[in-house]
Length: 272
Image (cartoon, rainbow, N blue to C red; front, side):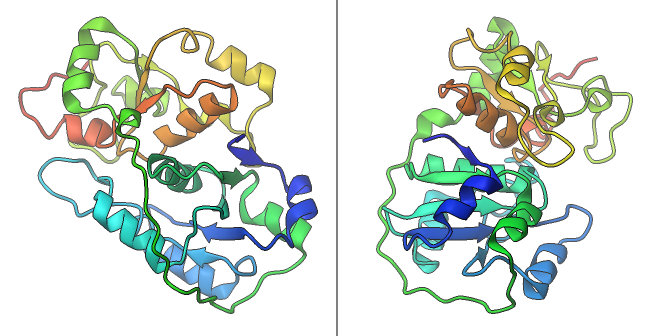
């Protein structure tokens, strides 16, 4: 299934019974933002999943700033919000990154019918015509996931890639080259990683770049077997992975802990 949907397409299917909307709005600068704006108004029948509470696991010494939730925790989340195997999951945020993280988690669990709404909630409002403050409730499900661990690159895989290649950094150029590091304690990038900023895959309107621009952006990735993408904490790298899926390349792996996990090991080197 193509990993995104434009708002024009949403209008054609908005009344389909099996659609489930997921609101993933969040702000790294204000952890309460996502819940607040969800209460102020969301797409009808959308449930909210929070980056820290639902789309991440507990922070520890290793694992990065936004570790993956455990398989048990993610399964419980899917059951709690009543997801069924045949549901079409449509995910949105204010732009792209948090929706892409949720999309990746659904794919990891083996849910094929999952897409990100390009343009975020504003696109949804344009074509559904309304928002609501009503919080929907769904009966709990007995969802049984089929986890695809081949989507994950372990730290051992990443260490190997520092020699063999096929490793890509999704952050901005100034964080990659170490000239500006606003979050992590060490500046720089994982040795042998190539720069591939996720922001280049998305337009100012929060939509994917067109097919030809994406092909050009990922020209050095498309023929690489099982490439590994990372970012600061395993969130924005999911945008690159989703964009590559849009080009038909689905053997891409995520290093979940990403740079913040890498530097948690004192023996790991960074460049420059």
